[in-house]
Length: 240
Image (cartoon, rainbow, N blue to C red):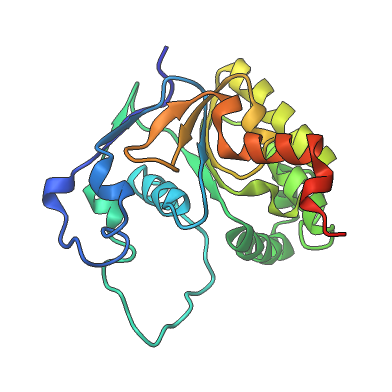
């Protein structure tokens, strides 16, 4: 069965450079194509492997707007940094669908913008649980957003959503992903370090720790191995 987003192809032969980020990352030269055969796809891998970069590029290539109130300025400007989406070929199953991109800082920007909208149209808050997102704790506002936004048909991309979530909230998010995936209206692509989210039974897990990127079983992810070993052999990690 294919879901909203069927596959992406990285058009490596068209890259403008191989010497500058992100095109210099092994991910973008050694991985040619990714398929999305399940309603949940999880990207697992170490920091710096390119998970978040690819996730943002997929969002942009899929026509999903990424809310930002401003961009950081840097002393050295890399003109290639935000151009990866131009070299992704997106294949849909039955045409494009709406969706959203979640990232921790991006969510803060969105919550602030929503607060401005609600000042003139309070009904906007009803779409996200009826309460201001900025007056709740960070974790509470995230869960309110997830519970309400993901009821709608769409493609949803999440970049490390576990960052501000307690283990119990991660379990709730896991259940939300599973339920909405089974309902058939929503498709999720999630970059995560959380062994809780990686346990999603409906998911395809792609490991970014070896190139080319390939699908792995939950127990073969480095995240599972590290947490499993720590919980079973805690003393060897603790200094006397």
